[in-house]
Length: 255
Image (cartoon, rainbow, N blue to C red; front, side, top):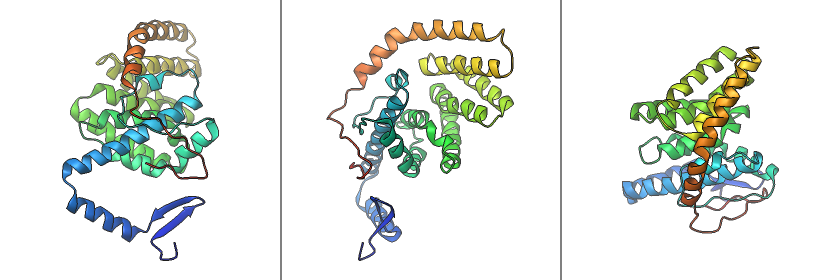
């Protein structure tokens, strides 16, 4: 700190000066092979996905979405209470979204899409909403170019709720239709459950009450059909290689 090599943008948060970071980046690009650089970014993406999934789970008890995410080789943090979990998410928002933004290549795209799905609270935070929307749009374009219907559908899922919260029901309806198109192209339990739930919410808000029972019945039937096999498979795949550390708000997480 005294030598101005470190900066403290917030209490108990430290970062290198911009010039130091640029120098470190140039050294990595010079000394590390492309494969080593990709491996480092992949480890960081794993850390963010695993930790953000833990935040999502503790904020939404009973939601099985974390059971259907891409498996990670590296563990994340764990949380004992919702408040520090959400605090971690908002504190890490810029770095987390930047990590997702550079993960549009084939081997990381699905993990990046899952990260955006479980980090959807950032879209409602105000200060991080614009960056979230921009990164999400770029990942949607990358997934569409690769023909990855699962990633496109999962990336579009948060958009329905964002439009609903903004009172943009027509845009929300269009987003729901776009997700339904992806649902027809892949058998994904996350997309299936969300598209029918969102359609039911929109039907209620637009006073189309005769539509909602059908939406609930269809959602229940399809979700039950997928749950038995998909959840067991996902849980077997998500076995961390080492115990996850616990994060406390008065210390930055060690990666």
